[in-house]
Image (cartoon, rainbow, N blue to C red; front, side):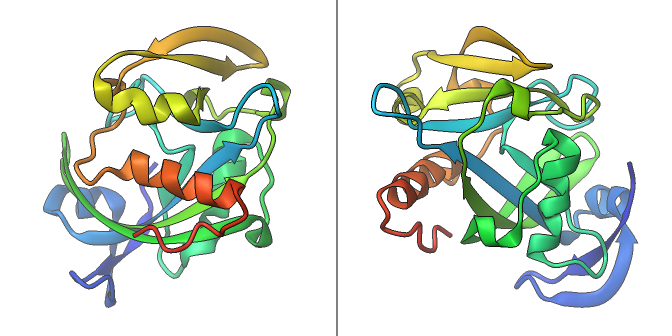
Length: 210
C-alpha cells in the first residue's frame, strides 16, 4: 500500500517535502521507518529467544526473507513511537510506548527492485513472553513469526544452519535458517540487536545501539 511520507536530508532532518513512498524508493530519497524487535526471556530450561518475521511471498522487496519482528514506514507527520501501530497490524499484538526500550536510529541504504531504499530506522526492543496463540498475522505482510535462541543467532555468522520454530495460525513448524535467509545488512545489525537484548535481559539497560 502506498502512503505519503516525509522526505529527510542526509542528517535525518525533515526537508518539508512530502512524497509517496513509491516515489521515495524510485528516486532514492531519505525517509524514516519504525523497527521493533521482540525478545522472550524464556525460562530456566530454555531460552532466551529472538523473534523475527518471515516476509510474505507476495512482498515486492525481499519476499520470504527473515526480517525484524515488526516494522513499517512512518507516515507524514509521524514520529518514532507512532510506528507501534505496525505491531498490532502485522502481529496482532498490543504494545504501549512504555513497554519498549529505544535503541537509537540506524541509517541504512539498500538497493531494491524499485530503486534505492534510504532509511533512518528508529529501533526499539520489547521484552515479552509469547505463545503461538498470541499472534494474529497480517498474512499479506507476514508469512510466519520465527523463534530462534539468542545463542543460535550468534552462531549464524559461522555459516551453519540453526534450528527455528516458525509460528503461523497457532501452529508450530520446525525448520532451519542460515544468515543468507535474512534481509541483507552490512553493519552487523542482527548481532547488535542480540547484544542489546542480552543487556536488557541482564537488567543492564540496552543502551544506545546505533
